[in-house]
Image (cartoon, rainbow, N blue to C red; front, side, top):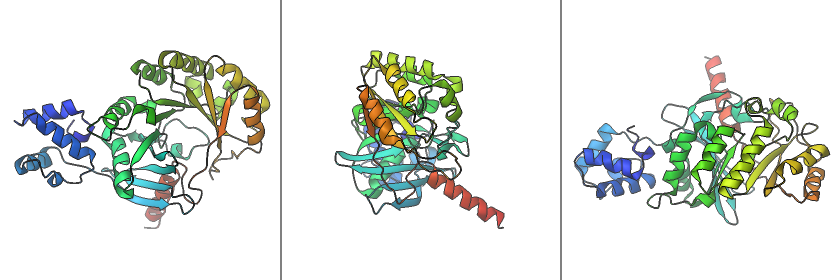
Length: 347
């Protein structure tokens, strides 16, 4: 691996040692990389000879903001980042009273096939490297001039389908000589990759796990979330109970509420039954109206929330941000791909 920004401090230090450099150079270079330099020449306290050697052996790659949208309603900022190979991913900066949150992508596209998600329409292209995930945070900060205090791994891709890179990213972003963002300020969202949940539990990381549930019964969930055919919802609930027992961390269950599909009272009752024995938070999500999908926003959101609360569950409705821009993950990338295809067809 010659992508220095994907390396831990100890790995980077060993690379520099092999170049004949003293150990303290590792601290210097690591810190500069996490400040978002775009050229090794910016590392003013590093000898010119080393800067030139690094440029030749470990080219520094940074993302380009191919598109940027800023909401006039609430200041939400949506980025379409172009990577070195020409692929694009999205991230979103959301402003809250407690600080700024950036939602990052972990893959180019997604293979999970959830029926209501724009990210999965073109399938998965490839995994992101730890550096490519990290750069979304670094360069969002640099472009906006604002500090990011919270991270959500809920953009394009399934984080647990790229778990090795995600775990490395978490280690990097948490490092005191890097961005130093605490684990309790990081949330990871999964569609229900059970082996990944169990492996994550073993790490003991004190992040917040968000599970995209979207239906508590296997029949409904399999129709809208193909991952349920590999890891049935009963297996998912069991893994969630085990995760809570091992970590003591409350899980947030994401629930995109769909008209006539998953918004029945009996489904609310079943959620309460399956979460019994652990503190669960249900985050109801007003469905984004994706043009390619026949699934529409529920007209029973308030009633469903009330039914959940009648069982003693905490149920909230996700605040909608960036209503005047393409803030739903996958939409901006999809538009760019469609425009590129139209351009090719017209030639």
